[in-house]
Image (cartoon, rainbow, N blue to C red; front, top):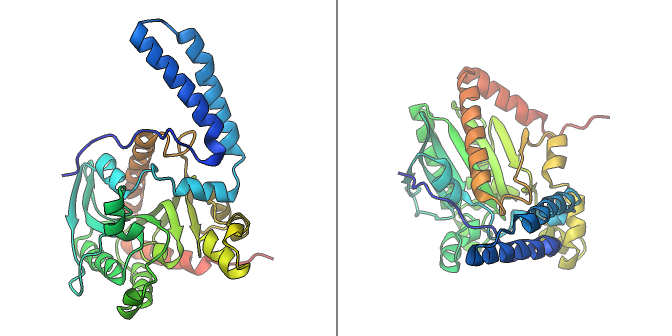
Amino acid sequence: MAEKKGVREAPRIGLPFERPIVELELKIGELKSLSESTGMNLNGELKPLQEKLERMTREIYAGLEPYDIVQIARHPLRPQTSDYIAGMLDEYLELHGDRRFGDDRAITTGFARIGDRRFLLIGHRKGKETKENIACNWGCAHPEGYRKALHKMKLAEKFGLPIVTLINTPGAYPGVGAEERGQAWAIAENIMVMSRLKTPIICIVIGEGGSGGALGIGVGDRVLMLQYAYYSVISPEGCAAILWKDGERAPDAATALRLTSGDLLKFRVVDEVVPEPVGGAHRSPDEMVATLRGRVSELLDELARIPVDELVERRYERLRALGEIEG
């Protein structure tokens, strides 16, 4: 059973472009503490500051550069798969192992429920503390993680359950052991099988959508992206290292890669952008979790009304249309 609880508090240490926001937040926090400790009514001072904070946050976030968005997607307090499991689901029964090698903690799979809708949830898991980060390999899955996902997806198809995937990975693990155990084959097989599974599939990029690591659980009937997530063939740092031999040019690479939700919606790589709270999901995680719960419920209902053969045909046509160039 998924435990209902609030996710982590809003950060007090911001990204470089957030410093004016954080300074004002701290000032508001000090006034609130003073009001609580002394019993003084400081609403007259607080209200203008809160209005200024919201206005400033909207202005700063309206002018973000692509690499700023990459930093938001990686924010340590951004809601992760575990937060959505805890706050979005009414029930979650985790399923383990790939029946070949082991249980990769970088990917979680399990039977889930929202209201009366049951489905299979698959998500990248990064971990929150150092020990958990290491155990989950910072969300960089091994081939056994993708094989675990594939086995559970076939199980979902067998029982007529929809599939929801939460994508949040810098990329699949590129180590020697992963390559020896068939990393590229595992991802390719997942892409092929997901393209023809006879059950509805919803894919959501909640943070980082890195390369084949994202695609391994990223083929669906509806592909969504959170407003300040990114989705790319390679990380900006990796791209900069290859093109310019200089990781410091990551901001230039982020701009060139066109990896933001707005660009990818325009290119029809994703079908929908899910709005985030003012200042990003890391500032109001509970609100973000509630928003995604509602949207997932709506999409599950919508896809359930489409005959499965038609669903698979549409999915195939969607994949065929990717990369089309209009003259």
